[in-house]
Image (cartoon, rainbow over all chains, first blue to last red; front, side):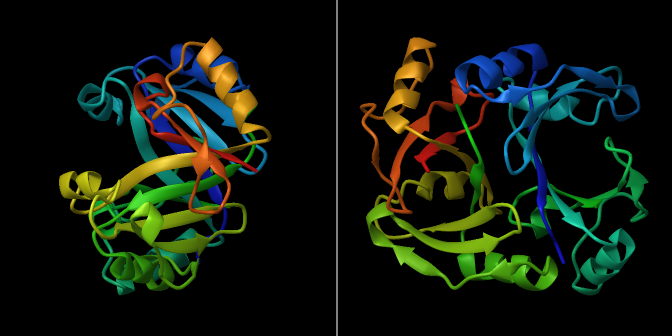
Length: 134
Length: 134
């Protein structure tokens, strides 16, 4: 069912500072910071040859990553995102296996403009998993 | 400097159980469990089209991931591993940038038989980073 690892998301308090770590210290190809207001994040994409790292900073009120960054002021890995061909089929399979899908189970449009779902970390090795329809 | 994301390592208390999550629930291609005694882990590789997930269980006395799993009994993402062409050049660059390399700074042979180094999470967005010479 799952395909490519679309990205690893790392949440930080200051995305410009994190950008410098990836650009200067690690020598990766790093894009400009972009605000995605409707998802409550300021994001920088680190382009690796085979996947992406997304550096996320909380933006605005009620950012979904604000509590995480408060608990992890040095930053930390927030989630991994796997691609699926058909997100509704994927959800139905997961539910039939007894796995918990977060929210009301309806895919919403994610930060890349594609349907996404988040899965309960307790059912997935303590890891918050995003599924994105490729 | 950094190239491909070689793998994401997820540490868990029971790698057979985690295997089933990835094989049955997420429908990924999952290999057999292997003991890598000299690194203190039992490991399962999840092969995605563009990278790998490594599921790690502590093995034996003094496993380097034992404390992590004790703190995170449901499991959690332990580290990410980026490939570099020349690990000694990479280390020297990192040190010149003021970043902390763990241990005595000498690459050791990692679980894939290649030279590796680990970098201090505090200098890398709260993320334990492994560098592996590709």
